[in-house]
Image (cartoon, rainbow, N blue to C red; front, side, top):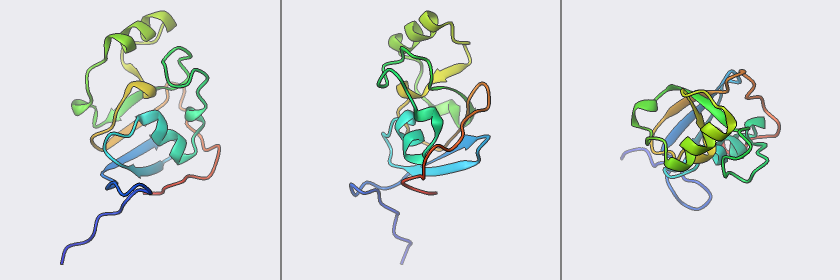
Length: 122
């Protein structure tokens, strides 16, 4: 028999492995989880958003290090948020990214540190 998949609290399979640098924190989350929510679940300061995930505060910007090929293109809302906040072209708002694959990300200043105990570990 094959190994049973790990499940989230709501019964969804934990399909996506997300790694945050430089903290080396990794977390498995269900497909469809928002990257900002994954950071919150991992207990990272990146998750200390001030706008509720609408892209207006620019506190959740990340650089995708690995796995970005399959990430959905920027929406018009994300493009506008980047213009409004003067965000570099190669950065993405975590609040705009819905996860469907493994991903490694870092913050532009390398400050994705733990702020709380993670709810799920990889």
